[in-house]
Length: 252
Length: 360
Image 1 (tube, chains in turn yellow, orange):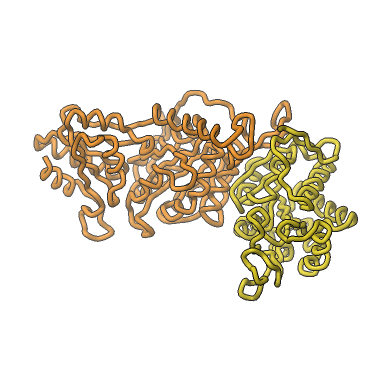
Image 2 (image 1 turned 180 degrees about the vertical axis):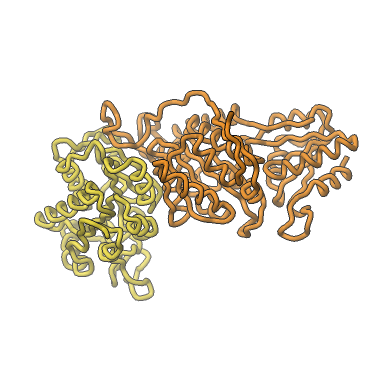
């Protein structure tokens, strides 16, 4: 049952013993490919440690050819902080998380790693619901969105979505914060640029860096892959605008 | 000559960790263990070691997870309510087979009063998954210092978290401690450590997971194969690592069983009882898990009765009863027998002696 899977890049591939678990039209695979390309570009494959929590994003644990860890749900930033302090500046520490992992159950570790200015990088894949558990309310679920735990649509009783990139950009320990999406080749390239810049902030030892990526979840959105892309453009981007929210070379 | 200094039991944790070449501490303040985190904040950064004050105990235990995964020796400490918050992390550390040390300075429920109320939680495993952790129960500052070193050795030997179970009295008490570095057998190399591929000659990838058995690996292709491996490990520890101190048990008709500060109190009661000609002995479990059941069973079969003394409502008594297998009577002195009928009271030798005289 062992099969070979490749990112398409020359060096980053992995031999995986399980079938790929992503649903058709899911962009997690795309995001992992972008990550692998960026790691390749920067030539940091051999000294990168990838930390995942729990959720669809955890697949990156197997699908990347770097040292990797699967840890408790929501806790990658705590684990990453400790590892970076011990292993030092030459080891690049990446947390690869979903929106639930990063800003729901993982809100405390994320905010405090950012506030401490830990020299780590978080990539948060935002698909506006809890994918693995079947499409429940997430902190990034937009107003009116129907999920299995907001069957009549998210309303004021459920509170309001967290704009993680803007929010984290306000913390002093953060060197870089941006939001991208993969809705077009241009956006793919732009998002890759954000991802690269975020890792460069870590390499330069500036502070915490964060990139949020809007991704599709066709199965739980009950939309086709194509309709899912349209939803990101028409519904998610107006709520979560793309761009850089913080980019500093030094933290005073 | 080895240096001997006067220190608090809580500070002995730090000096013991230093002697064990511990490299990282993660912790969150909670009474009555604050001197531990303050010691590491003061002594670790200037020695080029890592100290991070986490945002909560869940943070501490997960930072410990990261620290242990790099292969260095790492430690955290907490008190009872913080210990409760760490349980998920304990489960994950055990499943990921990451060696590390956790010092638990117990308090009574959620009060800052001293007690021994976490016995069941530490020995049974308070988290999910049915894991086990070795628990060392010191009775003095010197033992806290020594046991932290033993804990790191056992953690590395079995790739499992190890708990050092202190309490408010031991932690706050000042005693003279000899700063000796203990010698242990050589340990296997940590070739599983996650440090980036560049750290290995063949540049091969390493993975560390809290879901061993779920993602098929050559070592554990499925969950049952991991469980088989883990239970073999647990059985090996049970077989080899039970430690205890036995005192005057040969002719004893009544054997006291106590750990931690209560063991010192009980020994005092025993000495006074012996002076009165009463045939008393004592077994002090040093490892609360694995519990030294063999010696208990042996003495039970020889006809000795047991008096368990613990500063809680009766937790270790279950293990003593299990070990005695119904062959003898097992009695209890609990927190209800403190010398003062208020929360500040402690179990005193006089009370213990009073009950011994009634029983014998």
